[in-house]
Image (cartoon, rainbow, N blue to C red; front, top):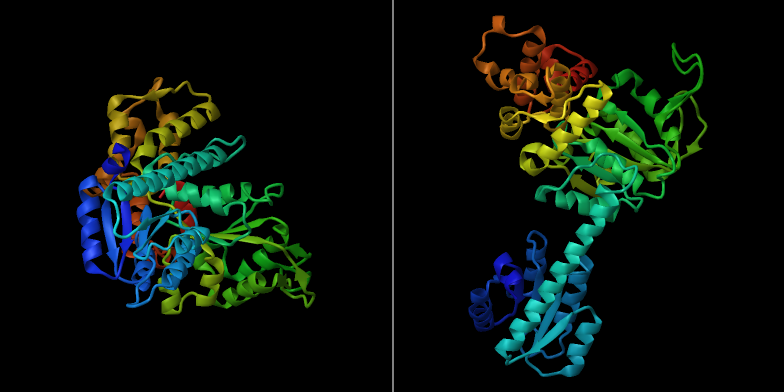
Length: 457
């Protein structure tokens, strides 16, 4: 069974007797298993809250002079609630077949009697962990087929190991009606994740309604989201349907959710809790059935603790969180993404560009991509337009300027290059907070968002 040994499967072992844990370590670690140990059910659950394991091997009795196995049976139930697929193997010193049968009825996969036979322990552990690994591989392939290869799906290139948790969550959560918070840096592809979640849901027959809340002026936010009636304010010459009503029976995607003004957050929370809203200037209550997907590059937990974002709204939005890693952490995907964008823009602009010169490809692979997938997209569009032959050359990418901008004089840079550098520096100083960066640059938030999109930042 070399697969288990070479992959260093992690096994959580729980027993209240230190000598039992030591004996299992001596038996299993030389066989290639990585062991985590616990002395009580509480310690098991604490470890499972922050550690990933491939299986658990637990005793059924922890309190001295007890033989009922009740503690172990309760622990099985608690583990099952966290992960119903995680293999559980039980141990008991009391050769009680009825208890072992009850444990397996509760969800244990197999049992071992103390004193144990070493060969049986190794066989049982290897078998259960290999079955679990095979099950996870099958789930990954199913998710890949449903999400990455489905006909008519938005382009979702995600073969890097860092993207596997994203794909698995999409497959599991997409068909549900749960609210989802998508987090990640600017340009990582959070909107594509939202589109994929919607396409996998029973609401896919309806159009996804997307709103970039960061680009909405604060004065028009309420009207855009909730709608208004004629005469509600000076420019309200006709009734207007808001985005929530447009998304009735479908999915509403609110991008840059952290930018919603505090006084509007209460109204958004009410709609999410009750499914009811009133247009601006109206007292008529309207019912809506909307699935909410929101996205942000901000740390909403920190902002809620600081009082700049309502904690009750944060928890309402964050039924499930999907974190999209930056492009620098999924470099395996860069060649496929670059080729995809190159093909798209070559077709759009009717250019016979088919690949990269070696130096250009090396730059694409080594560049830091601070603007993530969005910056790669913009770079490929520019490269296709600038290309003089059938292959992209280093100069076509325009990345050399970005790489050495800090050492260039202003007289050597175009106005757009200077503006892009200043925006990147402002965002870096504000730790990605667009509102703070906009204030520092003397721009409105909407104007800064338009420039971020323009430069692929």
